[in-house]
Image 1 (tube, rainbow, N blue to C red):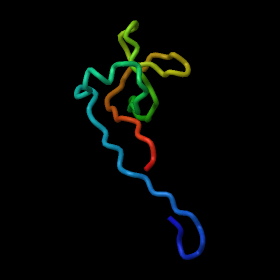
Image 2: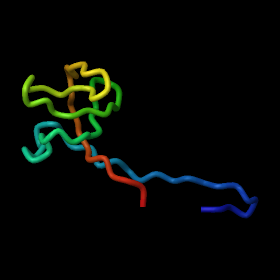
Image 3: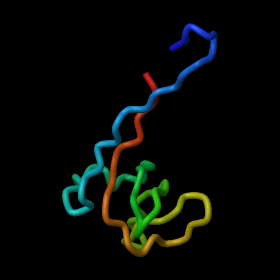
Length: 75
């Protein structure tokens, strides 16, 4: 969106956070999700071998995931 001054303004949609207990089982297929761990948003995925959430870059187990949201591309 362009303003009258020629600058670009970016807007973001509300992230539909859901409690981790509501996560459908089909989301535990290795896909990356937006997770809320303690007080920070992180990208994570379910590791079925370790039966826990992990950071896909560092492979560090995420200990206190409390919310989740799908990652959706901009429209």
